[in-house]
Length: 161
Image (cartoon, rainbow, N blue to C red; front, side, top):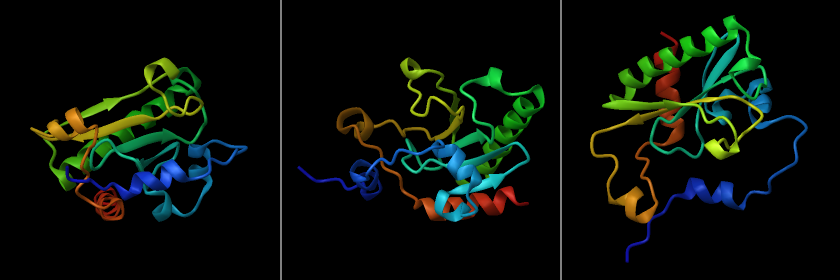
């Protein structure tokens, strides 16, 4: 049997999980280190960042600055800004990575798979024909061919146009 290596996962698995006064997305929203946090764009009421532990290459999350658990916690303007940024990110991912399609979704509540219950975020996962193969089906492993820093730099450049 051949071993597969996903070194970015072990950092998360072994890392001590600190108890924070603010949530992960709030901490990232308040940070000025966009490169370290893989933030690719900031708008007035929301921002987008690469998922550090992606399902697929280019997996982005669009997050409002306001920490709310669901869409009802946003004003109409904040909701519109969120979806406008989703559209911008879809266009940037299309230009940079040329996927065949996308999964775009929100997990609301623990039973729906939300990993960060207290802070709404929208997942954008690029998909390619044939990207569901034996790796995720049999081995429970996905192969992310690009380094996060490289993808982030390309997306920042595209979103900055």
